[in-house]
Image 1 (cartoon, rainbow, N blue to C red):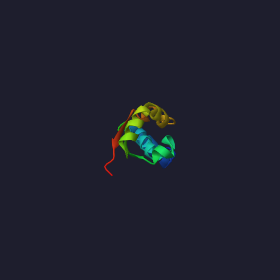
Image 2 (image 1 turned 180 degrees about the horizontal axis):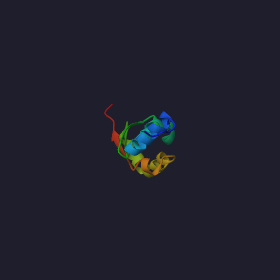
Image 3 (image 1 turned 90 degrees about the horizontal axis):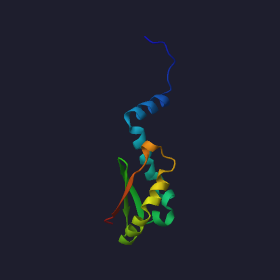
Image 4 (image 1 turned 60 degrees about the vertical axis):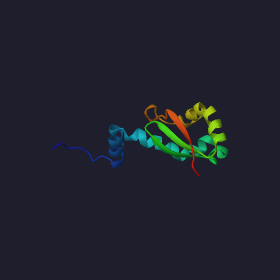
Length: 101
């Protein structure tokens, strides 16, 4: 039996999440919460970040005009979204979908 100091649960959990690859996905999911900060109020009023699957962000858009407009600034949005994320947690693409509301 190995004699060692107890490990803090936070350190243990962080290690398990990192080894399993879940830490990156959890970081990516944080993008959903910061969407309105990234795009600003005007765009946030007509969009909603709905899900992250792998490294793809899915965003619902309320009008075809906005859908078209956002397609032109997609690369800029990706740069803003990825600020503060690790290389493993980066969002590689955004898919805009017209909402059915």
